[in-house]
Amino acid sequence: MYFSFASKDKGSCNVSTCKFIRFPLNSYTFHALIRFFTPQFSKKRTIFHLSILICHWSKLRLCISLPRKLSISTKDYKRMKKHLIAWGILSTMFMANTFAQKDIDRPIMGWSSWNTYHVNISEELIKQQADALIKHGLKEAGYNYINIDDGFFGHRDETGKMHPHPDRFPNGMKVVSDYIHSLGLKAGIYSDAGDNTCGSIYDNDANGVGSGLYGHEQQDMDLYLKEWNYDFIKIDYCGGRELGLDEEKRYSTICQAIANTGRTDVSINICRWAFPGTWAKRLARSWRISPDIRPRWNSVKGIIEKNLYLSAYATDGHYNDMDMLEIGRGLKPNEEEVHFGMWCIMSSPLLIGCDMNTIPDFSLKLLKNKELIALNQDVLGLQAHVVQHENESYVLVKDIERKRGLTRAVALYNPSDQPCDFIVPFETLELGGNVKVRDLIKQKDLGKMKGEIRQTVQPHSVMICKMEAEKRLEPVSYEAEWAYLPCYDDLGKKSKPIVYVPAPDCSGRMKISRLGGREENFAEWSEVYSEKGGNYEMTIFYSCDKNRKLEVSVNGTKTVLKDLNSNNEVKSVTIPVSLKQGYNTVQMGNNFGWAPDIDRFTVSRQ
Image 1: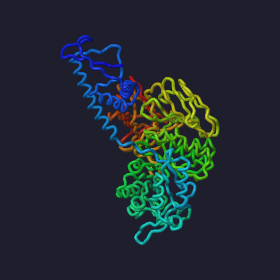
Image 2: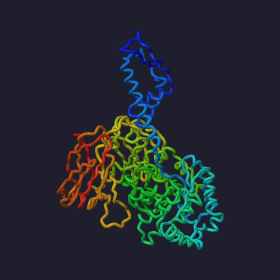
Image 3: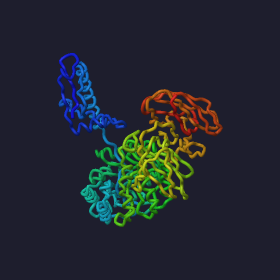
Image 4: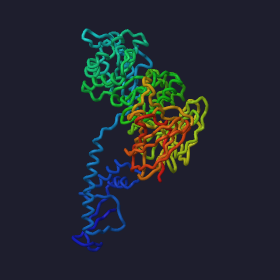
């Protein structure tokens, strides 16, 4: 079987007069050609497979056959050859650029000592937990960090150098990191941004007094990361809080000391027990967004609630940390499924917190659920966001595998004390046609569905699905709570800060309040998507109790809406906008006064 080109010195040619160049079948190029002409395939892979075809130009190897030979004029043949060579050059350049890009960091996975042991740790215990992680197959599942939390501190000598606890770690900390590394794992360590550690306050550990980083930033970072060779550091804030330090300045100083060590591979965790602000992404791979977790349902539920509207800040390999896992420490099985499943779909770090030598079988199996882990470690690194909130139930969704692709991860989350009947239209999830649904917790296919999914979810439970659709729908509505707010934090120190506020009358029962007042206090949606581009109508749903101004920017083109007043009811205003093909950026704010509270906006093609 062949595909043939005909050539002739000049003029047109036919079967009887032309020379034919035949292209024999090659399975690899056959795969390439099929992929190239397959719709809905990613641009990166399309270019990759096109490149395979181009690279075979010299041997003229294509991989399909036609019932008769194809004849073309010499002029057309030369033109086609010229275009193919040009495509080859462009695709090669594209590939070089694509594969030169660094893959994003994924949320770290491993084990940490604090939940079970607090400061009561030792060299022997840490080694035992590392061995147990290997024995239970958790390394193969992706868990590759062994993190030593508070409790290893001994004393500082006359030079200020930290020495480990002589009884807990008699052979020093380098011996422990060497052992962890010998197992093919990475080693983590702990400190505090202030002068005293949390263990000195909450566990009365006298060795934690004066053991924090305050005044010893470079000295400690050189010791922990260069001499002791640890790969991760959690930086707490108990001592920093007692000293009344500024979080951004303090963590910036510490992270500069880390940079000064020359170690560029260290994973940094900011542990301030609340979303610290958008500056954290500049410094750390992850940041805590809540108080310490406890092995109780209300604790797990409260942390999920804290993280429901922070998806805009988990991007480019930086993540909202929902704290260490309490799997295997007394939660009910369905509550453990919620705990692990929501940590996975929300892309939180996954740090086991139990004694791995006594972990129950159910808990171990859950921790090794490769389909849930795949959501957490997905190449896109996205956090699921809320698309439907009715009564006490939530529906969350995120892209996996490919942006704007046909496959999405969906959570039907019921934190209430009563069963919940979910009815979720697939158009709410931007999915069209028949949708193939798989339950990732039960690891069971549920078949194809059309129009909607209906499911009853029991109290304190979640159903997490992978959905594959026939087509992806263009989004129409954008909730305020999806927006990136550059001035947002959850530290409670600012006067009248911008906030996400519960609002029963709003579409997602949430809104943005205290928007504006200064230029930098805006809301931004950076992925307003248009399949073809063109003219649209944007309808903005807002509320306020007095005349207010709203400045709306679409890709830099600003529209000013004056004298908006809804008497605190949700009203709307519509403006014409132009969207380019692909992603568009929308900003809303008011440089010189308060803007209305924002519920959402919709876009519809004119």
